[in-house]
Structures are given as structure tokens and as C-alpha cells.
Image 1 (cartoon, rainbow, N blue to C red):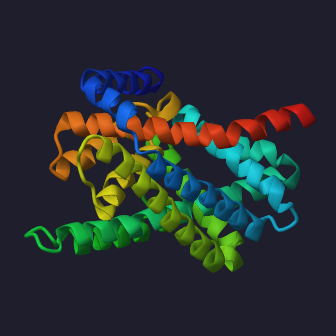
Image 2: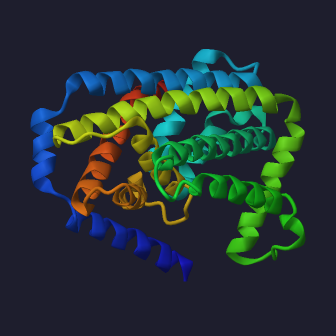
Length: 297
């Protein structure tokens, strides 16, 4: 049943996005796209690849930095293009000689830190966006909810059944817990590297978001950009994540920007343009390394 339901949900989301696109604004962006802002966004985005390669180097110290950078480029492109995070398998494939169990643990630790860093930075966006409004309590509630969730997950093995979707969720978190324990000496350094990665990544996202909204004649703040893209980043872990992420990415983005007070058309169209540009960035960086890898294989 899930083989029908998940693709159907993805298809319906894509239909929703297409029906709500403002093609006039897309044409407006193509005419007025601020090249300088796009270039700044691209430079910061490239820098995140350097930092991510450094993070892998902390745990896979025997692998040359250059090879790790190429793995980051190919792995990122695969993750952005393949559905349901199946692109993660490219990391195991490209570094398979190091042992699957070790690579799986390293990958889980990195992903856990990514989710943690997104949560931390997103919480700050909630704080800064609501500090002068009546619903500022969202920030402490977010922190409390996150703490309760983490505490629950570490005792999940006693409460979550083995089968079905919850069983797979349980397995994921048990594997993550095992990875944290097996790589505990690396945790502080990996967390610090991950936080730096996401700070730089959000800066890149801000300039990319700003370039889209500026072409519309609209303004967007740094914390609004953080708030919006965080919703989209979290949708990438869902099993309904489609090819290229189209539909799910825009759904998260649209929900966030509608909450921020933008119209549905602006939210959907800006999300589509941001997403397309991000895919282009990852392809520009990843495709040459993939070609070289195929050539030297």
C-alpha cells in the first residue's frame, strides 16, 4: 500500500505546486535576477562543501581531503536528485573500501548532528521573529519539545513496536544511538564542525533567498530566510520525498512563508525558484566529479 500512497502524495504535492506557480514572477526573476547575490550565495555554498569534507576528515582521517571533497560533491548531488534520501547510498558506494558498518555509523552521526544544528538555528529564528509578538512562547516550547523528543528517543526501544513504520523509525534511532556511542570521542568536534557548516549554509541560503525575493520587489530578513528554508530541509527526511525533491520541498517552504505573512503564490513560486537554483548549484559542483569518477574507475 505504501508503494502507492507515498508516490501519490508526492504527485499531488507536485500538482499543487504547478497549479500555484506564478509564471509571471518566474519570468520576472529571469529578467531581473541579481547576479551578484547569486554569485555570493554560490561562493558560500561551495565553502560548505569544504567544511563538510573537513567534517568527514575528522572521522575518516586516512582518506585524502581531495577525495572527500569529491565525495561530498557527488553525494550532495545524489541526495538532491534521488527520492526518499536514497542518495545517501552513494556515500557508502564511493567509500566502500572502508567498511560498510563504519561508514554507516559515520553517516548516521553526521546526519544526527545536521538535524540537531537545524533545530538549534531554527529555534533562534523563532525567537528573533517572535520576540515582539504575543506568541514569543513558541521558542521555549520548541526547546522543551525538542528536549522531550530526544529523551523519548533514547528510551524508544522499550516503547516502540518492532514492525511497521514506527519499527523503522525505532531502528533508525537505535542505529544512531549506537553510532553516537561508537564514535563518542568524535562527537564534540563533529558537532562544532556541523554547527559551522550550517551557519555558513544558512548564509548561502539567505543570499539565495534574497536574490529571489529582490527580483519580486520584496524584502526578506535573514531570520525569515532561516525560518523558511528550515521547514524545507526537514521535509527531505520524509519517505514521500520525490525525485529532485519537487513538491515536498516547496510544501515545507510554502507553509513557512504563509505563516510569515506572504501570499500563497509568492511562497510557492519563491520556493520553486530557490529549490531549482539549489539543484543547479549541486549539479554544477557534483557533475564534474561524477564524470571524473566514471572516467578513472
